[in-house]
Picture 1 (cartoon, protein in one colour):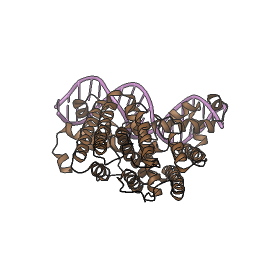
Picture 2 (cartoon, each protein chain N blue to C red):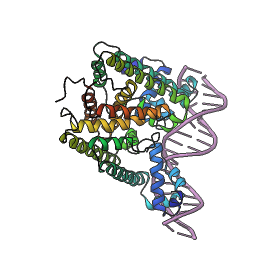
Picture 3 (tube, each protein chain N blue to C red):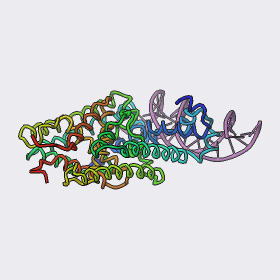
Picture 4 (spheres, each protein chain N blue to C red):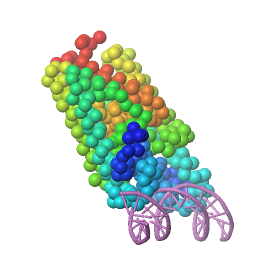
Length: 196
Length: 196
DNA sequence: GTCTATAGTCGGATAGAC
DNA sequence: GTCTATCCGACTATAGAC
């Protein structure tokens, strides 16, 4: 992966470097200089390819949003029961302490303040929520889930559990609370054969 | 509330100003100068009362943690069934788009990197989780919840839904996804009389 | 206790040479 | 396309007067 970075052109390297820094430090905490250094590019080079910090960040955010959307679809579009697909989505391998590259940006006041920067974040998280709701709806139609459940609400709860799980994990410095939250949600969601 | 700020001494005003800015902008995004201006205090004044940015932030974080712990206990320590208390906790009045003053800090790389700064965050979120687990345990003992549920896991899921609900709400610029997630979780948690 | 002055570094961006 | 030089303001902190 690093060797891949080495063979990229400057514009690509800048975007990839910006993605990493935005994920780790957010927009406010990411300086053009830091991006340039991480990308091995000079100042002039960056300002040749991008209009400024915001422009580069926008390119980086859009790419991360694309990737997140594709990865989600890859899991939720797979086979199996509705519960199995949601379970697969929740248990999917994740770098928990790094958190979600999109969710992280929602805590950044500058991202929220600039509609252009916020748009890709809103769009992709909305799309994931919508895709989850579809799966839940399938589970309702097949009788897998109780009719009392609202697909949009369950979808929001599933995604919120993930995003909040990252928060709790980072607070403790370990992934345990994330795993706990996911298991708790899955237990609540599990189609039960009979009450004890 | 503003008039209350006016009557506070400088040290108090600095702490309150820091609390607000940390909540809104995080540690990385909060400068001593901005705190001084918000507090109506000069530079020398701030460095007289506090050793520096980190020291002031620590005081502010500790106070916010205390308040959060007390507010949580006030709701979860109230009367009613376990479900009713968890419902009250989830539906408690919140400034959703502002999010959680502690959860927000977990996204800050400097807070996570400095154990002193992270400690109060970890402590209070752990305490809330523990308190929620106690309530769930009471619900299990009274037969309110299914025995299949694990109190720690449900507690983590409840708190994660809140924290993640803030993320989703901020992404859209409105509180709807938060409310959706909360309703979804409550529906999953609801003691059901009978399956349909 | 609070103020002003000062310092050194970084942030974000522009200009112009090569 | 990439580089160096330069700008101006902000950040974090220290020094010392009042």
